[in-house]
Image (cartoon, rainbow, N blue to C red; front, side, top):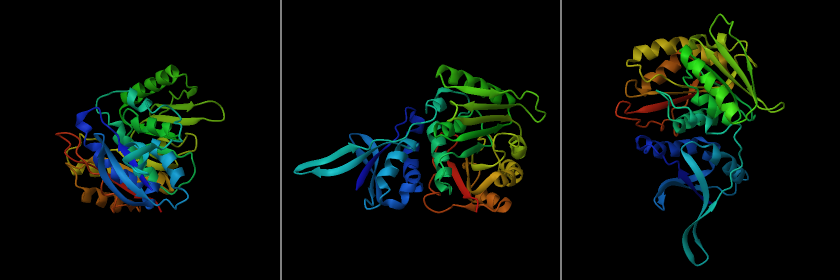
Length: 334
């Protein structure tokens, strides 16, 4: 069976090539990856697609297609592909009906614009890279962004139906994100309950229980140092235990020594918070810090297994004139 997967178009020309680069490794890292016999880039009616040949004898192929296509970041639509129908020359496309309803609208991750915001399409790919590498089958996972900024990763995790936990050192970022969450949920008529924790000595923390009784998810925003991540998550629902830690390292860091100082202390903390089979996914400005240096840091300070083979070593891509290369590292806890 052949399928045509549309590469997500980007309104901003700055990111026009980003999804083209990220689409193939995201697809191959997914559960569909083991079923794909061949994949190549193609153009149909002026739009960029990946054309993949899938083992149609696999019982789970149709189910995976319907559930994964709406979750992808760099891929937006899926079609069965036919070279011809009878005597009619193709190509012909038949839409693959998606079977996934986001817990909160995807638009929640797009609605808030702020300085330093990471493109939400890339953030979705980063989150997927972590989730696809994990060894969990349950539907409800716990995602920690240890450097959450304005919350893009958290909102995408919520949309996927997961509990989302964020830590941010900048108090103003945490406060303004909490205000946005309240206002957005209210405007969308999404029920939520907030726990007031203004008295915490270790920094302000906001806890939201989102959804109606019997179908709720948790969103936690904590102000504090990520090197104390376990402390900040100790009293939240479920405690400091996570299925995935997903973070986008600050792009303003100019030297490897600064990254090293942060990760030397933070990596062991994040590793201890991960459940067995959990994953760490980090993005960083590889213009300044080489991939080999990042791998060496993770290997020196954790027991995590770094995935440095195809497709996990294929996520590097340009961002703009300053960040000429951004890369992604994924590691798994035994």
